[in-house]
Image (cartoon, rainbow, N blue to C red; front, side, top):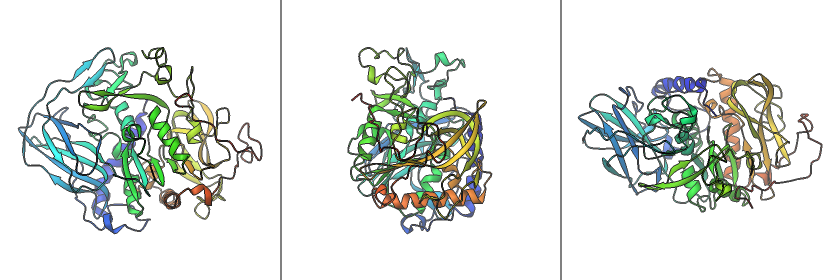
Length: 513
């Protein structure tokens, strides 16, 4: 779906306040600090102050993630005579949301080749030569931003995840790089747009062999708006955290072995078959899942190699018949997951089901007896502005796990239609619990300056307390054993619901089985 301009404006507002917040507090106050991270001094001044003219400095990495100690190559093009690269680990450091871990010597600047648009998919690649190799010896797992600083004053970020070697016993945060890349229009094309403005000419495949755009993304994908507040919050809570990208989730069936939970962040729309299968298998082994967005697992993609390595080309035709493999390998063609001729709706894994955008509304409490909400909020209470820009609800016209609870049921109007947005929670025979916010703005509320809520302190405190309670329970293991879902759909008059439903866990069928 088209990204509404409103949340992009919200992203700009949040970024504008981060510098002031960092100078004062560095992080929200609710959970107690974890000394290993929060007692370390941060590095003020890490934010970009001047991106410069378009393409004054751009860069990308040849890996979306590395293990600690692995090298990563950076590809940089700039009009500057020279530049430096500074690596920051992101988190709740004292005085700042970032800590410098490395800085390069001065590098000679070079304007590299113009982008190439590959037909017939209108795939943009930057056919550049590598500029420098960075060693990550001693780097902790986490999310990192390289900041490129040209002597012309221009700055830009390049993201990198240093993934956790073993996620046993950890809550695994997944950086949603496939969704970042889908919306990235560096070179003029994304899976949504083309230079002409015509959607018919948009990309059908996008490559990681190019920078993220400067406008809106600052070279960092959607990390700064949709993900940084949760990274900061989770580390400040002092819980055992692991890090990976959704490309890792796609590529490594052992990634989640022994994990306590998997957390996807504010916008994680683009999923491959392997991503779904690996996540479903983890849930069925007792790994808890938290989906903290409103549009998860909506678009089907497949990953292919490029000259720089495996899984760096993201194919997404958004059409069954247009995808050239629809006759030879129909289950891997790339319409939406829910679309015919082989519908596999996301509700079987999420619990709730995507509806519409753009929307804006208040979160409304519907089930204050639930263990996550009890003592924090009360039925009918409104948390302002936290439903949007996209939303989901529990919809029994599609396969839905039961029992399932709706915790917040929020009236909304989207494209002229009255509806409800639902925060849902279900549990499984394996003991796993699955929590889905059904809104993209949940993570925003973890920041005390959240533009969507107008910085409302009650909303910040409530969402922080609920999220902390969720993560603490998830860190203990299969949360459904201690906190089984109690189905409340009939009590909320959700269409098609009857009391005491037969427990059911619909098959995922993402691979066609």
